Structure formats: C-alpha cells, structure tokens
Length: 168
Image 1 (spheres, rainbow, N blue to C red):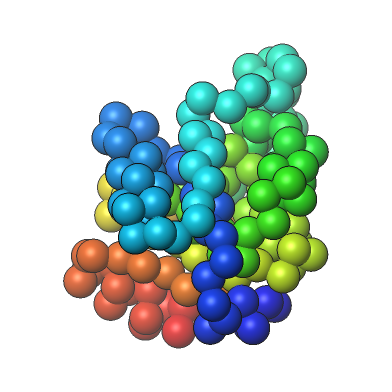
Image 2 (cartoon, rainbow, N blue to C red):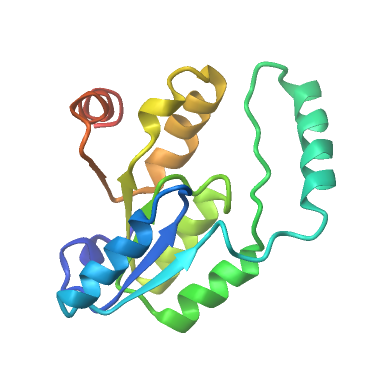
C-alpha cells in the first residue's frame, strides 16, 4: 500500500463525496481551500451513471441471489474509467472518501487506483451506524469496503470502538 502517502506531505486531496442531503463534502473542500490545502471535490451523486444501471443492477442481484441468497450485492453506479481518469488527472497525494464508496465504485478498484497513483486512501465515516439495522449491507461494508482504507476517521465512539475491535 501507499504507506509513504499516509504520512507524507499533503500535495493535493481528492474528496470523493458519497453522501447526500448535507453539504459535508463541499464544506470540507471549502475549508481545505481556506487552509491553503489544494483539493478537488467530486460529487458521486451528481456524476454520470453507468449506462442502463437500473437494468444491469437488477440482473446482477438476481444472478447473485442464486449463488448466495443471504449475501448482499450492489452494482456500483458509476463508470470505473472515469474514476481512473479523475485520479490520473488530479494526481492526489491523498484520497478522502466521505460516506460510502461501494454504491458508486468498487472499493478494491479504488484501492488499486490509489496505489497506482501513490495516494493514501482515507474514509471519513459518517453513516456506518445507520447500517446496523441492515445486516447484510453492514456485513458487506465491513468485509469489502473497510479493509481498503489506510485510515478511518469517525466522530462516533461506538463506531470507533467497533472498528478497532473488529478491524484493528
């Protein structure tokens, strides 16, 4: 992994904003600017969707239910090449995900792109507690998304305790 980028000087932060309803990602971006930290804000909710995502997602869910009826599956909404192009164009030293990324891009793919760019990968966890009631989705998030991050930032004592005890 990009261990050097974790502790290296921040050249540029790419913010991948995956939450709606509140302008947190935009506010983090603006605050970084006020602190003279170079940053780019990418709003995942406003990005171009994968063509025919609805039909592809329904088919993928049906196919995966046949394999493991209890598993959670989510087809990412956005086009992977656009993520690669964004990271290549912006050349961040650090990538900050706000919210979840799995709804938009495959977390392992993001990890690979971050490694290729030599960028540290961080999660600002805002919503994990909201997943507790959706067991399959919560397990998916913990097993498939959390492990890709170099560091996880959370303001929730419950979430921090859980992450520390289950993921180190």
